[in-house]
Length: 386
Length: 228
Image 1 (cartoon, helix red, strand yellow):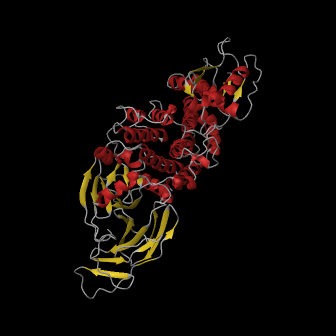
Image 2: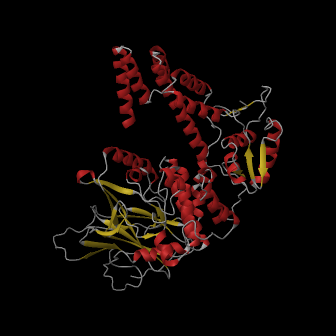
Image 3: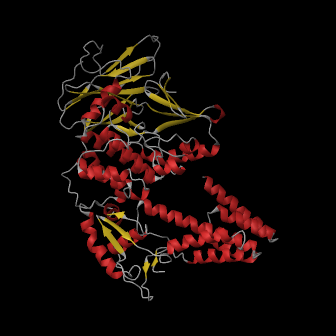
């Protein structure tokens, strides 16, 4: 296990128990037979190349416990769409469109890789600590081994005979869209908004799978067109399998909901120091600071250094050097906004940013006992408080 | 049979003349309608199947000329009505009994399975007739989730029919015919383990142990391949 994470039980589903640590979540399943495990691992292998390209929450590690029980380790995303709607009700139209566009994009990528989600609900639409929506729990291997109880988001054919296919995933997207727009699951309330959105929602939730949109690529495209009404919808798009071209996806702006969620998620993890309004942070003249808590003086010095951020307009690429065995936290602060904290295990990260705002970044690292922190680096002439 | 979708689309008139269905959008519209015979299909669904790369802002308006033209080119329904009906932005192709090969095919397989335990000879004729309707991958010109699911369903049904044809032949003690059929099927899909295992069984029963052992080695190789 990484970085001195202490895990505690944060949720129990009908099958798996979920444990949350500081940065990681652990989902424990009862024993499964070899065949299920094989199928599960094949699904994970098919999903692996999508890492970093589609908003899918990857399983970082598959751990086999004694007697063939299974534990899946992934990054901790504490906020879900279900929780968000429960707290604050239906989303604003642009937020609902942005979240559902991300969900459909994730499903489209998985379908191209030959993986069906099989149980899409607002509970597995999560928000990454950065605030970006990600879809968790792809795959039917474990779902077939432990068939979940039907919910309002379960497609009629899944309810009837256990069918889990690409078309039942469309129904799941419809349910998520319905909740985001109305605050209620399908069957209660009717979505309001542009005619094409009402039509799309109705088609996604069609009783007969054949009446649903022809592919999830079509859904991605239609949601993108609604998000970007100035785009010329009459012009055919050349990309294969109806996927949205990367350039187009990048043009989708970060929405207010995304920032709001990030703040909520940040409150759930313990953050040692934030970049703004923390004049008391001890800092040496060098660009690397070591704050040692209760560690022996024999500990060798370790270096952490943040390279100059590369401003890509709607995203910023950060990279840093740091010791092995540490978990990193990137602190992102825009002017006049509460800083966000993004947990990472790699030594680089692409952070989505508002094209107009000024930002400061710094990286923290911890191995459980020591906490290191770089001095902040700015873009667009921001003045960083230290 | 007026409409044939078990392979490239073919349409014939009642007098046997081939109907001229232009390739491209007209062919796709007709194929997408035949995917769901006697069912109302929305203009949006139809337009997505025909033009998968773009969103049609007015699907009904865009589809109308094609539907109109197809009604002229296709045989009348019930000898008096237009083949394709439209109502409130939805379309329906009327197909009578025995007019569409995919439904005849499914019926033949069903009849064969019912007859198999009591009358293997008639059952074998049903399975052979069903397999004979197959000319290639159905609905290959479409690429929607539903068309792919139908293609898969019909493909599985064909393998079922062929497996049952072996059952019927064995029930009639036509060992040589079974072996020949199974060998042809292993050639068609060498990676299908079930066919190899069946061949082992039939060869063993026919008292041809050397060939059975060879087939058994092939089956094991295929199983290993599958497990990768």
